[in-house]
Length: 244
Image (cartoon, rainbow, N blue to C red; front, side, top):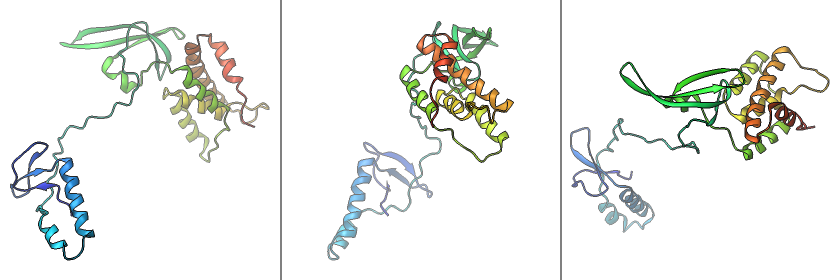
């Protein structure tokens, strides 16, 4: 086994001081040292038998592998492409309510603590709400997608509906989760799968209700992105021919 620690060396550049189970000081090897020792170990297995003892003697064998502290901080990768702060006047998508506009971003003191709040108004249903800025990402608050993203949305709607062997109650819950996810792709999938057929078959009340909710959310964002009224956006989405 290739040693990842050096038991009795001074802490030098690129090393992390650690202690083994017996309290003995040992240092985690830097990445380049690990690679060097792995290369040397490979050389032992491939070198002639006469050279193996000499090479093996040059490799230090550590008594144990030091464990990295469980408290070590891990910095997550940034996955959001839009890291701009939310500002007054921005259009935003709130997963549970659709498109809204930011009216205020202000700091208020509550219970001796200062909190940064976002106030959002939804013109269509005449409501407003406030959320803490630090909770915005967890809630799923985002800006509307680009026009290019809607090219993929139209491609999804044009696709063949996906079939499932799940009972309708479970399927309905899955569709409702997609509608509340705030994802335009998920909304497009619901529209594709639940679009009413021309003859009106397989069109139960719950199925129609989920479809109408999905097309409404999708059309609201489509209208905001392409700067048209909602009725025209619905017509545009419904005009996409389904797969034969």
